Length: 113
Length: 116
Length: 308
Image (tube, rainbow over all chains, first blue to last red):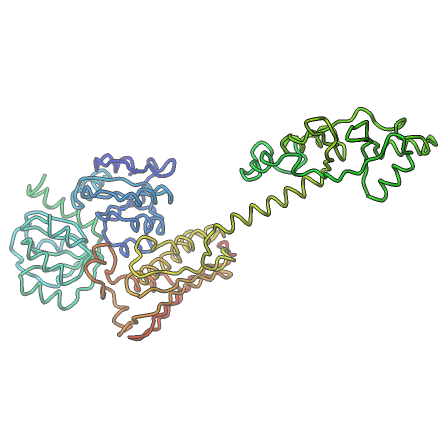
């Protein structure tokens, strides 16, 4: 599954597209969490991050673990600093109005069996 | 789907508090933010979370949830287990992550026609 | 075009600025040594020797008549004309600069004509100075030095950054969620620049990030340090308190003293120290209630994996 496909499944709005080619590169998996430590588990990288946390730290954490993209669910408004940081660190940033549970279901459906 | 069937979601899942095993499950909510759960979780549903904390039980009770499924096999503090026991809320520890638990639960609920 | 070994199509803005801002008059030597038309070539040669210059303008009352170059002297020597007046032997087709020209123009003349010096005329066409190539380089160096001092004075004194490649030292403040994570990012960047394998970089930055967040969430403030040596990075987090009453308990997965506000920001789930211990090759913690806490985590990588 690519970020583009995930975005379509989530009806997500693209806030920052990330580096060139980010939309079409295939994702290694999905992490759904609102806790940064949960994201900081070492054996995952190249994952799509689904979170209802809208803060700078989400972008920093994604950068640290090598997650190429973050989707903020629940339609949370994004602070300006978060968008700036996504641009600075080259992390794709999207926003979806789906709640987390539905977002997981939608992405899993797009990812196929 | 009943509360007791939740164990099928993840190999290696274990019950910490069995709660009311024959109650039906009416929906689900995935979140690690308790304020979010407090505002949106569906009554009669299941909470999928990583927050193994006594406050999670308080929030679950407030929303009328039947069960808490803890992702990543998170250990349960004793005060959390005691609170859940007292409130009749089930707690399941499952090795899978929130994402996987969510879509698996959805497959079960969909097959039963609880949701689309 | 330029004599300077720089990319003249797109030199740095500071240099571009200087080359345009500076005029020939700002850089030229105004105390010009000249000879008169009736002086002998021998006199001119003696003057050049004394002052160690390779050319001398022929001028009277500010009016420029020509220039005696080293070539002219050599020719005079060969033809036995050293006692002739310079008027007869000087170069009369003199290439001159004007005082108001920008220095970039003056610099281009050296490349174009390959002369060692150019007489400079003022608006009234009177000799007012002489420009040698060394005047340009010396003045640019002086101006760049001034500019550098000016810029440096504007930079706030940062944490110890003298050796950014090997040693990182970042002050972390309590509840400063805005800046938290910058230290870990710095460590990540440094290791990446050194060519360390991504998997090891990830382990080191995860350890650093968790420790940095611990300082933000739990301490009164502290310092995050990283010392990068051959094949390893040692990350240390030291704070000034309040200390941990039961270190064993703090290391248990899921144990946390964080308040709900911190939890709502996505931290304080009681996974941090466990995460650090999991990713590190070596881990130690020292703390007691009322005193500070210091945590040390070492991440190692095999030398073949692009060690420094």
